Every structure is written in C-alpha cells, then in structure tokens.
Length: 440
Image 1 (cartoon, helix red, strand yellow):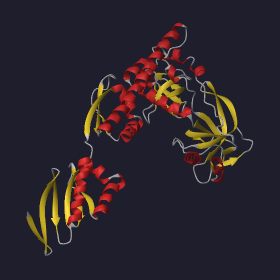
Image 2 (cartoon, rainbow, N blue to C red):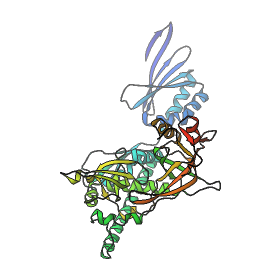
Image 3 (tube, rainbow, N blue to C red):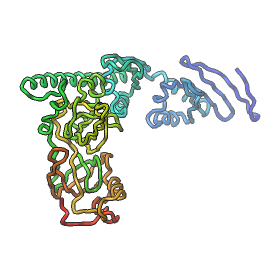
Image 4 (cartoon, rainbow, N blue to C red):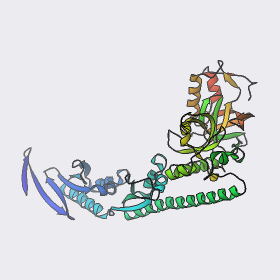
C-alpha cells in the first residue's frame, strides 16, 4: 500500500485483483477513483448500443465513468470510475461482470477459389462490406498468392464470435453456390453453342467474332419506354447524357435488377484471363455486339462497335469505339480488349433507352456546354435517382446498323418538396426555347 499526500488530503493507492484483472483504486476524502482495464474486444459490449449499457451503470451506481486510451497498439482501454467508495466499488463489480459475460472472440480461416473472390468482394467492395454488416464479423481476403489460375485457393480470415463466424461462412457459401450455378450455366451455354454450330448457327465460344455476331442484331432488342402508371409516367434513371436533345434512361423495376446481376456475372467471367483468351475477338465490324470493359470501374458490359480505326502494323492495337447499349456511354478500346458475347448475355433487351426533351430546342444553334451541364445536374445523371418520364412522341431511326426508337419525353424530378420540370427549368434559366412543333 502506497500513501500519497495531495492538496493536504491523504490519498491511498492500493492495487486489487478481481476476476484475474488488475484495477487501481485511489481514495480521497471526497471520492474514490478506480481504473479498470477493459479488453478492446469487450468494449462494445461494455459501452452498449449508443452508450446505453455504461449509462445504465452510471445511473444505477451514481458514478461517472469514462474511457481512456492506454497508448498506441494496446489491447485494452482504461475505464475510469469516479464516485463515493461504495458506489465506485459497485460500478467496478458491474464492469467486471460485463467483461466476463462478453462472448469469446475467435479467428477462423476458410479457403475459396480465386475465381470466386470477385463475387465475394463485389463492386468497389460493396458485397464484402454487406457480409460484414450482416454477420457482425470482420472478414478480410488475403491479397497475396498466384491469381493466374482461377482454381488456386485464397485465404479468407474471419474474426468474431462463434455465431458471427458461422453467419459469415454461410454468406460465403452462398457466393460459392452462386459461382457453381454460374459455371453450370456457362457449361450449358457452351454445349448449346456447339450443338447450334452443327445446325449452321453461330457460336459464342470457340468461334470467330464475325460468326458469333452475325445474328446478334436480330437476337437482341431494345427495351421500350412503357408507362408504369395510369397518368402515363414511367419511373426512370438517367444513365448517360450527350445533351438535353440526346440522353439515355433505364426503366426502374425488375429489368434493372436483372441488369445488375448480368453485369456482376459478366465481370466475374471476363476478368479471368483464361476466359478472355477463349473468347477474345479475332475480327470486328461496325455493328458487332461484344463484351467490353469500362475503364472507370473495371466492370464488363455489353457494347456495340460504332467505329474502327485500324492499326496498319498490328490489328490487335486497332482503336475501337464502343457504345455501351445498357447505359449509353461511349469509350475507345483496343481490339485486343474485346471479347465475344456469350449466348446467356443475349437474352436481356438493351436497357439504355435514347430520349430527348420534348417541345424544346436550344437557345442557339446547338446545345452549349452550360445547358448540358445544368441538365446533367438536374437529371442526376448516373446517380441512380428516380425521375418521372412521360412520353410525348417517338420516332425510329437507323443507328449503328440497327433500328432504334428515340422518345421525346417530359422529365420531372419528384424527389424535392416541389416537383421540378427539368425542361421548364432549362427554359427559365435561358438555355432553351419552347417549340410546340418540336415534338420529336
């Protein structure tokens, strides 16, 4: 026992051990201060949701408790209890009781094939974050190892309670099952393609790109803008913008969910080097439908070739302009980056619907950058915010060696307290003029 003299008051410092843990107690004439070491793994349970548990202890014992860091990279925090000797002692006992009741934190490793890692991680890590949130466990994927062989095993480390780990493993098992189902679909698709070849039909795997794409224009159709409500409006996302007179929307509903699923599966398949080598195009023509990566997110999408600038020295280095038929964006890629499109990805109609604002024409001869920038802001382009589109008219035109329907629409933003007619907003800002004859 060590006696301290502070401000003419006698302080008594004693070390006591409870439940195998050390606490430090300082007694003064006014109050007792007790320090309790709390393992970091137990902090969440001791504090409780939004501090509810620690608040309850403070109210029950009439004490004040706060946490202090012991230092960097330590496995414990210090709970500092202040109150009368009896109250502080009661709070200390309750803290130790809580610590002892906390479930044991375990670490477990599981191994998954390299080909499944993309499905587990998800786009920008969304899937693995969701799995952590649902299970309550910490899930990390080993970044090392040889990723060239899709059958190589990757370590997944899971840290949490037994129940949390079990939930996390079940979620990983779901991704493994999805991968197995996907591989079976690919196998069936390949078998079907080989059967069709004997009947004089085009292939997608093991066939040249001109064979694989010869009938793609007939197989794939464009999604239609069909009213989803009695008032004639359709819920849409604006996915890409060239100007207010040319932009693309996607309808909200089951098709958008199917599109997300298809992009996830395409990305998983085409990011594997062996699959790229198997399906890489050998010839290209304007109008061919292909699988192509998008440089900004490294996902794979369906695209149509709209222009070819051949390289005289190396055809694989030829510059190909791609229009992504489900979103409306354009990009330029090398021929060697393109792959043929598997039959299973030719079922869903093209989801990008070309539109223009009805009744409007630019204030000048063309839509200027300021008008386009304002339209992009008002329409929340590529932000997946729901707008209401009402078809006024439509026309068919030849585009990229296929017939497409272009819709003249009114576009309304109903997300704010007061609805915003986007076309009218452009007129009021001085970027557009109303022309009632300009319906289409």
